[in-house]
Length: 292
Length: 292
Image (tube, helix red, strand yellow):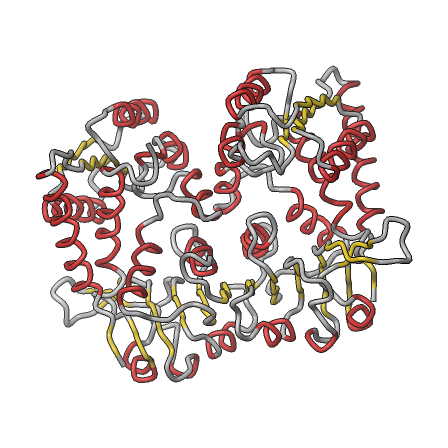
């Protein structure tokens, strides 16, 4: 059994990105520039954005953080988005979600110039991914592909079961895993309405769990030699932790891990890869890799 | 065993559309207007476009056919697309594929205003479909959903196996069948690289075959009571036909049909539904159902 170390892999990739950025800058090229819009003071969002800014530093990117209070109107926010669209120095930008209720997240996402949409949430990027065209792939699915690749997990022709059908993980993951140029796997998507979920899992060579139910995948649900990617990160109370909680994956790690060829832990598996993949998308934006 | 009669269903739907159009027009509304661009003289394309014009008549739509010779340049064609984008009288339009080699089909598709993209091929519509937003769904997958619905085939929680991963059928079909608001099924996509394709099929409650291999699905590959949707339409030589060929599905109909709860024949199953769904999209365009 090999543990897929997302933390180490992410660090490695950030180092690779930093190297490439220095080469680009040394060659007279432009230093990639990521901007982030943060509305309000949600604790989780604050942390994410801070980590994104730190990751930019680690990668040698320029970063700009634009902060607004909770009472910013939708029109004002859309105007800010438009300014970033117009700003030639900004290669890519994100609007940290969630947004206050009076603002339509979908409207904001669609207002972002898809050529700067490094989160990969704009329908044009979602659509281009679905039909196999160059585009920004959103961070979590992209990070999972990268882990599978770096750990040489064979996917082509394998049976891959995806648990969950969210727009952020399950659906894009399915689209990527079935495509010849990415996973090239036989893909099954299971969800709350699936009747034979356990059976599907037991036949899977690769399981990607993204349902947000702690310890859902148990040892009796997997076969020997399976690869398990655990996307779950539910906060569960834990008195032994200073914070009073721990992050718990969708997989009952202790009993499942011994049967696995590869498994991602929680934390330290998929999690650290997401910001790292945002950095990769920003590098692509700086290089105008996907769009002119 | 019940045969799903696509021809009769399509006729029924066209009659429903015609009725609705007359109500709209009687109420002072605008008659939907579909335009089609046809480049060159490909026999298949000529037939398709002619049938689309006839279907417009049956539905009470206004239709416009714009014909160009094979030597039209890409720039000229893009200018024509732009004119249709600007034309307020045109609710929706299509560019009949394939196009001559010197023209990028993808460029032309992306030049179409997505609000008039009744073929549903623009990345914005593909992306919106993937994340469950209102949009034009392309004709073949939309037609299959409609057949399943009209024949009351239960899909929720069922195991649906899709054979093929094309951008036109397999991929969008998978996305639709897995979504709660459409199929709500457990979806497996199999393709040329799949190892256990036969086994997956034998466990399926619904099989949607779209691989273009005549008679690929045989009786030993399906369980009793399965629903089979056959999207294949391969021309195979047939001396008993005047034309010298017949259309052959992906399913060995004679031996599979007796085991089925429902099955679509070829021809007369999925085929007739496609133009009919283009008409439905045009009606939606006329009503500005999805976009302002």
